Length: 491
Image (cartoon, rainbow, N blue to C red):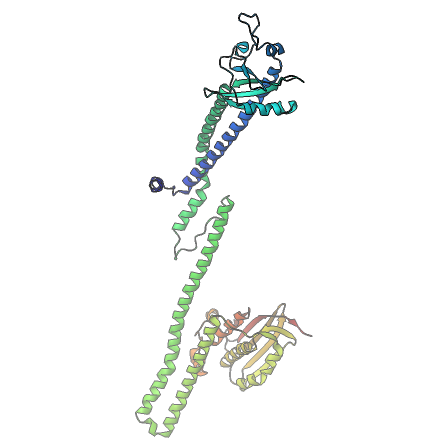
């Protein structure tokens, strides 16, 4: 039986359309509520009608003349006693405590005999006090299967035999009234469902329009078209929240794809530039080795010159590899060993080293005292050395002047390295921090530069939540300014 049921129900699948699912679910819920209301209405209406009818019967039973009860057992044929004016479906009967049951059919001219309960049921009613028996009714099923509503009244007097008067009425007409009301309610419910269906369909279709729009927008989105956004104010809170969530996801995906494309492009350029930078010293070393292998090694001066040149190229390669490794670490997750540092003291400790690198150039220091920053001291030294080395490369060996200043500007500490060199033209300024970019490759190569110093400087500054900027004009020198968050100024 279970297998048959499953095969039968398996033929009916739930609708895949959200509109149809909402419609079917709403109709099922509404139908269930109407059925529940109809059931409650039936129970309450039945109890109400039966209670009202029982109260009317109690009033009517009290108006029955007592001589009918006294003469009920002494009926004489052809008597002139007038019958009671009761409904044709109403019956009267008397039960005494000896178990006798007398149907007063002739007095009431009832169309059906009075139904009788068991003696035990009547005896239980006789035991009840007079004030506990009124206001209640019982339902009795007659021998022919018809239902009757019955009320009772105690006829006993002190010192006399106790009797119970029973009045009943058929419940068929009462049930017909209840069923008629239920039919009216059912018809109105069906009409309400149909009217609701006609009104609900366009409303539901209009409600799901934003969701359909989102579906159409989602179909045109792909990896190359992530700039599409869903409207976030469509008048429906849940749809708006869903749109905001999707827009946030699309924005993150767009940024991720953009970063990935940029990373691939940077890797391509990086590999090409690194290959080019490494090829030049390796070619030089290869050339010198060929010269030595052809016999130049026997000449002491040529041997020494070749070895010296190869040593210089090897140093360039080593410096390039170190810079590449440092940039790789800064591009990933830079690990800074930060601590509170007085920048003025850190730079002052480097004066001797910087003057040695400057040679005969003039170096001027203008350092404000007490500027505290949370930085990695080794990385800040690297920044200053890179900027200073860049200034040395682009200034005259004798007439060159390099200014190093440190001042506080609001919540920032500004470290500036300025020179009086040849300066940088406007077309080169936007690219000075690009990797392997050199505005004067011959001059830079002379001093062993690889074009990575300024890129490393920018990476270190950004890792400290700062920035580095440049201002320059041809023939007026260049000024590189590093701005770092400042913790305050100590007195």
